[in-house]
Image (cartoon, rainbow, N blue to C red):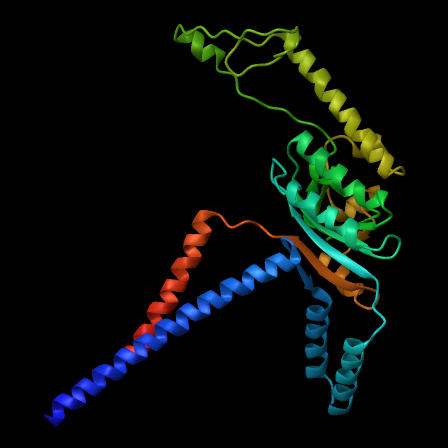
Length: 334
């Protein structure tokens, strides 16, 4: 009888622990969800991170590890004073743009700039864009460059940092900056226009397949993928590409007036060190080096438009929480 009571007691305790585990896990999940919702509402879909604190903390930790006890106290005292300072520095807002061929990040960039125009102080605060792009569609990158010009129109100074590549449409964006900062081996330039497409007309003819294109307008379709292309069509397309190239050069010249376009607008790409000699960039530094150099002058803040989570991302997140719950159950049951 005693053994049965002991077994029942043990079973009851295990059951109670499992119930407690369920309450703890779901309470954790619910709390996290509520916190995430509140945070998103408060920021209106944006996240703002104080990079100054992170950068200074890293710097203080390294310096204090190397310093003597006496110097260590001074470092900690200085860091504490800066933290309590009531005289805020000008702000440097950091944005990121990792461009693909369609410049799909331009929508978020536009919203971030609209937000900055409301919160940044003209003539005092600055914006630094971390740019990475090999270029892409003319219309998409033209829009991205136009969005950046909105900052300059409201007297907010713009820095653009290039650690890897800003070419073609990427440089179209970069040239709008008050200052272009590039890592020594970043690829810069490609002020040119390119168009390429395959043509399968010979294959279709060989297999007795006719392909017809009906248009209204003499130059509605100059070149096609399946139709027979003509010299007239090729010349018209080249003319259109030259028009775009001339507009590209004019845009660059307006924002970098000291460039020799005969040298730099040939479609070539240069490493940043050579690009600096040509006047395409202003300063050779990595983005991290640049930000650290501005720590004493600015409070550095990262601004990002929050992405809406896709269905698969939500499912993956839910799966992760389920695995966490299962692991907790196993620990309590053992």
